[in-house]
Every structure is written in C-alpha cells, then in structure tokens.
Length: 344
Image (cartoon, rainbow, N blue to C red; front, side, top):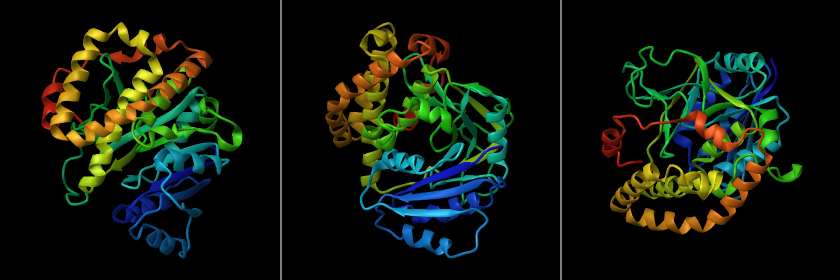
C-alpha cells in the first residue's frame, strides 16, 4: 500500500502535541514515520517531543528544531523535501487520527490512480466534553460562486448526512493525505528548494491554492468517511488570533485573485464584490488593526498573479473548467451563521 510520512508542524503547541503524537503512534499502517518540525517554539513543545523520543516506539519519530519560524508552509516544504515516502500526511498539532484511517486513505489512492488528495471525515475534538454529540469540522472544501471557501458540513451533527464517499473540490490542510507524485507534479522551483506549499502565504489558504493547482493538473481529491480524524481548533492568545485574522483576510484575496486573475473573476463580479465588501467592513469593525495589516500584505499580489499565470500555463484542465465544475451557490443559512462568528 506504500509508505507514508506524517508531518506535524508545531509552534507553541505544548498543550496539544502529546495527544496528536499519541494518535499517530497508534496508526495501524506499517510503513509509517512521523516527522515533527518545530517553528522555534517558546514553550516546552520541544521538551515534550524529546520525552517521547526516548520511549520505545512502533513508528519512527524525528524531531527537527528549526532556528527560526519558517511559517507553516515553509516547515511543511522542509518536511516533504526530506521524505521519500509515497504519500504525505499533514497533521495539525491540534488534530488526532483514528488508528485505521491511514490504511483506509491509502486504499483510496490505490483504487483511484488520479486521486492526489484524500480528505478524511474530520470531527470537532472537544476534550472537555467526550460524551457530547459528534460535530463535523470538515468533509472537504467547497468553492462558492462569490469565491468564499467553505468547509463542507462544518458545524453540523455527524448524523449520517456525510457518510458517502466521493470526489470533492479540495481538502483541509488540518488533516489530509497527499500522494507524493501529485505534490511533485504541482511543485514550483528547483528540486533542492522545491516549493509545495506557497511560502509567501505563511499559513492559511495554502491548502486552497494547492486544491486549485492540483485540479488544473488533472488530479482529483476524494472524501473518505471511513477514515476519521478530529480537530480541536485550539484557542490562542489575542496576538496569535490577530495573526490568524491577518493571514486569513489577506491570503483569501492573494489566492483567489492570484490563481484566477482579474478577467476570470470579472464574470462573477456582481456576486463577488458585495460579499467581499461585506466581509471587509465586518473585518474592519471587528479588528481594525488586523484589517490594516491584511491590506498591507496585498503588496504580495503581483507575485501571486505571476504564480497564477504560470500555473494556468501548465494546466492540463483549464481553470475556467475547474471553476465551472466546482463553484456552488452560497448556502442560504451562510449569512446568519457568518454573522454569529464575525464573518471569519
């Protein structure tokens, strides 16, 4: 069934990393290794991983303590470049995976040769409420006509409504399996410095950009409900929350505008502009400093547009066809739900 490298990028993740690595140690797939790349944590994340290194383990565990913070994308790229496995499992430190999930996802890759990505059923991990009803975190990415990206099924009860396997637009980077051949096919740059995730993005929406690149190269993504993981969406300090808001707001524009270009987006401008303006206004009211910082990051837009043009030039499936196939209308209840959570 092939070999798998699990890549976990940590940054002040001491609260979560033990639970995450315990779930990876219990994975039933034999050809499996775990690589932790620590982005210069200031807490005791590294010490906790080093404690686990001293124990007898079923699966090899490697720790790379980076001298500075490379961002999520930069650290993932380092991990992928150091691996020769057939598939890469990206795992957030606040996520866990069921023991049989990797074997199930690898079977999906075996059965579907052009499948580059497998999205497991990702449920909300609520350590303080183990008996609470299961809630869906995501079952894949949804591309909407206004180019807002949604997590399919997010917030809904796990009551059987998302128990059908099948193709999806894309997958969440919180817990996802990628075929190495797909990653190599869509990567940019020379082999010794190959960029799988776009490092200028740092974190957030890098998975959406990867969705778009892979679909343009003819790779598919599939959702597999028999593979199950859990995601805590851990809380953070106000400083860290601001950083998340800045990256989410700016990267949304960088990825969507950069990937499609102005001409493509103009065809849906009548639905894009009102919702994006609404998001801008709510974001500015909710966190004006974050909004100003996000606007400042739009200086990266020319580079994003260049990357998008290069990706479209290499495409075997025109991006217009990708968008036409996968774009969906906004869910009717989206605005009410978005207002509750501040249009994040």
